[in-house]
Length: 424
Image 1: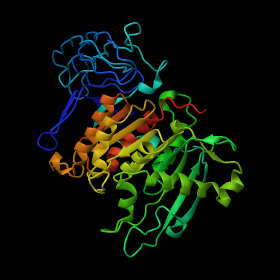
Image 2: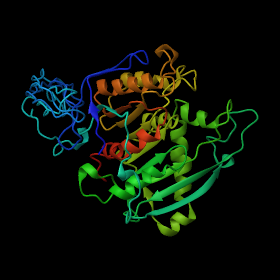
Image 3: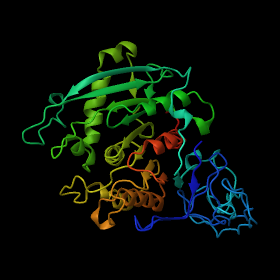
Image 4: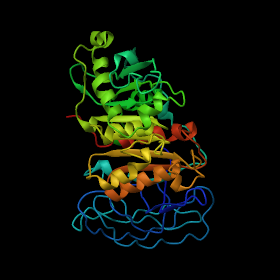
């Protein structure tokens, strides 16, 4: 399990300004987080109520150097808000100790420092984290010997077969084809509704590896559902007429309509799939629908949730910047943070966000609407303030779509993303 460090305030210096305020602590089922002197954090859901102050944390162990006169952390101030499992964390060692979490709770009658997994497993792992700058690939991201193989099928979808992305947005019109691939896990039973994830930019095999490795694991802290995976290749990415950017960076329901009214029906009509599973079904439950995307694929799958019926988003180095400017959204995907702030609360929405410390535009000012670090940080802050389930990772020393960071955080990120899911 990747070792995440919780934090109260990230300072990126001259790169991005002040990051999110507020510290996060992990429950007993998540990796130990760095102590922050017992301060509490605002809860992330439920009715607002006052929790109990954090208990004093003992001086922590130090992963990188021997302790030198560790001090006892002081109890935190009373936690406000609802169902957040974290309050104060432990006291300071030489580089931040690992003292026990303070107490906090949903309401005065239920406040306590125990694990919330039995009553609300969905909140475990919510918050802000850092990883790196040293990285180690998680073994769950590579298909293990003996893992169930599953079933795969692929076919071609041409621009002439689409009414939504037919190439006519450009002059002269584009003509192109794209590969569609479906993976169905070994555990799937024909006739049942399969939960699934859409992978932008084609089929990302890392998703399949995690499903193969973890779908049979009975440990809820080391498990993902048996997900089907839909890989959708993007349209051609040739500038200035980039079909990919049009599809992914435009803030609208267009990509969601393409996925649900053209791609998914084409999959269900595929002869090879019908021969293997005559009654194959995708779930209609929004909680069983998710998307994965890197770079501009991030706003693509964010749109599946924002404009459609998907509740789970895994965004890696998401391009929430002003790439595709429209009359309705003159700042493009940069506007997602404000859109989250202004919209009604969606309690079932779960969003995983990662951004590299040295990601695209990391030295550009916020006013340019072209800084990936600030844009992702703003979205995380908006989700936190709204009370949504979110898991935000700042990857220190990492660049754009950095594979070193992705290979470390993806398995645990997917476990978090699908936490609490139960098929209808």
